[in-house]
Amino acid sequence: MLFTDLPTPQALVDRTRLVANIDRMQKEADAHGVRLRPHAKTHKIPMVARWQVDRGAAGICCAKVGEAEVFAAGGIEDIRLPYPVNPRNAPRLLALMESCRVSIIVDHPAVARGWSDAMCAAEVTLDVLVKVDVGSHRCGIDPAGPQALEFLRLVSGLPGLRLRGLLSHAGHCYGAESEQGLRDNAREEAELLGRLADTARADGIPIDEISVGATPTARFSVAEPGVTEVRPGTYAYFDRTQVALGAAALEDCAFTVLAMVVSKPARDRIVLDCGSKTLSSDQPHGPWRPTGYGAVFADLDGTAIATDLEIARLSEEHAVVTATSGSTPLEPGDLVRVLPNHVCPVSNLVDCVRLVEGREIVDTLAVAARGKIA
Image 1 (spheres, one colour):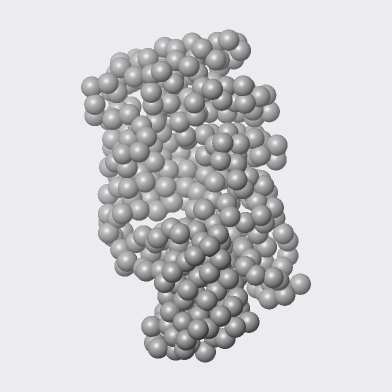
Image 2 (cartoon, helix red, strand yellow):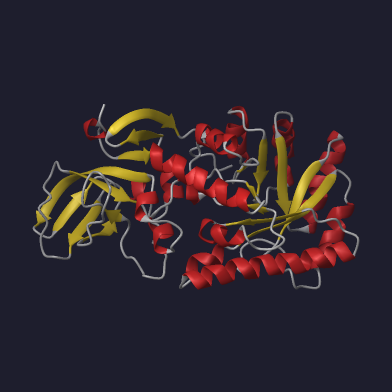
């Protein structure tokens, strides 16, 4: 069956590109002796996670306990939650620990003590890493603050917890203005973590792991001294933002949305059937300041972008596309492929993806962890 025979919109994943992306990142990590632990929130598909692990990944990351439960049920044996999971989730986490290795992050004394109490009550030990804020100012302890060493002492001494190391996410790298900016982000992240690790070790606190995340910086982070693990997620599919940031070429992008022209109110305006419920409303990032809510390909083979078409506006079921050249030959009923700005939320908006080779559908994969936000 050809994907052109499907009702629209549809999420298409190019199998050849997906496997090549997985292999390339694994090769990079292996070449530098760094563990690769992909973040599965990008694809949310146990089979894809299995492909990653079978090719050498140390395990996976999940954003929420619900995601982790899906992947554990799918046979993944090592799952890290680089998210501030509250101890009220202890019963679910304890159940998860019966089927796979689990590790979480902590960045607050009360939360760390809560997990210690829960693990002691269950007479088990939970691996934890301390989340460090390296510049995105979202979660994590201040590595240069006076409380950093005190918090590490606390966590390392709590019964029921085993401190594995430090973990960070340089989310601010998405604002980088150049490849050198990304390289600097990766270096600064590693240096901040390295200094804190050295301070902790001098105090007698063992720090075995330094785990960093983010697809844009992963290619630089693998070579940074002291880094033991990288946690990119988007690299499996890539998207328009990763292309804009130089982390991928257009021909690396494995995930696209197949859509149909459903209206043409003017010569220079068409409407596609992939609104915010399909593409999400995320804006693009990158030094060359791409605009619009995704990029429309010039052909159904996904080889080039139609530079004169801009997805200017989204409503729930409509994507309004303007032709900057003044007109477009596209008419109602025509099909197009769209490269999303940010693929992760798009994965969470569809029930399944169609695995394709060329225009042939070779498999349908359920997005099993879709909607697992708790």
